[in-house]
Length: 89
Image (tube, rainbow, N blue to C red; front, side, top):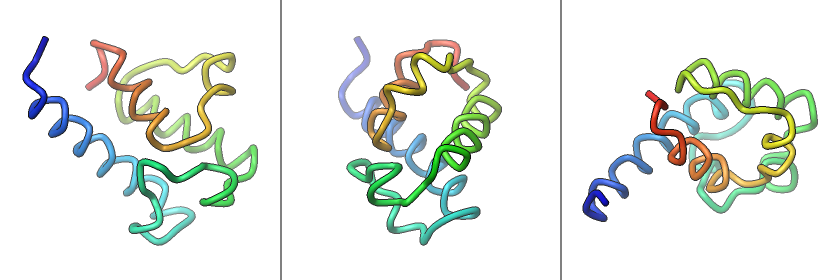
């Protein structure tokens, strides 16, 4: 298992990329925090959320099946999903 500092750095990098994707289209950069709820805090509707998932898939070269995407409601859940895929770039 990698040292905790590596995981924190990787999570910070993923958060930074997600912040850029979401804030460029929808919100202030600082509103996109790990605890932010995609619907309630960021006010992303279903179409916005689909667009974010597609952008994440393209950015990190992963596939997020609809069944998994439906379970992701916060930025931290999205980070965890990306982190759980070793092929994520």
